Length: 308
Image 1: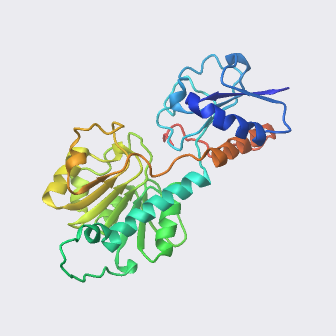
Image 2: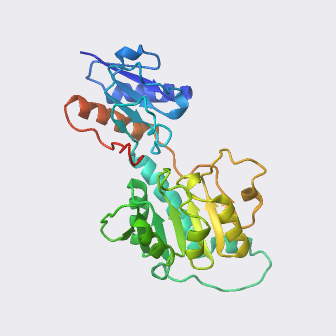
Image 3: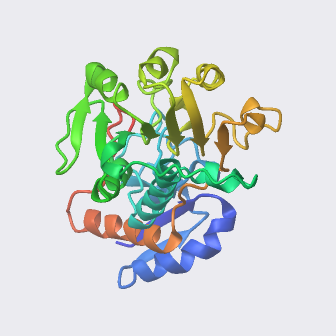
């Protein structure tokens, strides 16, 4: 029996993914299209901006394969009753790791200060060694583990935190509410790579920001909802937080009138920390389809109760 794959994502992506998916599924009797009768569809390659919301008519559906690492916009969809796999792509992971490590080093080495020192004053102030700087990575999924591992290899004292216990070689891992408090009290730099769920909303709020050592720095390439914006702005104004580099926001694009744009201690980047790379993402999708058709378990399945 032939396999039918529906591509439901931003239309501009179809000319890019169509040849990649076709090549990745070569040798199989497969039809890949953007418009198929719902009752004939076996797999959906999915992104929220593709418009598909009601999965009820897809009576033959075997799985939904997300092109996005974040699945908060589909995990709670009550019409979706088949397995949902999120995107875990080594290209995305590599891009995120490079962005995170770059901004940690920017803070660690004091690059912002050196860039703005144009007054002719010679003021040597070398940074400490990485081993004297504690970086706390909140979220120990694929992205968090990769970033934490590279930071640790550079000599940083890395603490990882997750909601549930995890054991990661070379990384001091804490978990649960008490572990979060212990991690934050030691952190010079905080990196947020948590998923966006009701349990993680406002992980950094007035109470948790106050736990950080005065003058700590924050890097958020995870999700906008992880931070209470009002609390962060207040902490920046008082000097409790020295600087924040933010790549994700509750509303995107970030509105021109938002206080983050004008704040002297905020760096805004336009959601560029990492992108799904079509070449590697298509291979992840194709590998999962081949696995499922061969009777092997799907990879990167989402726990619908946890939301990731």
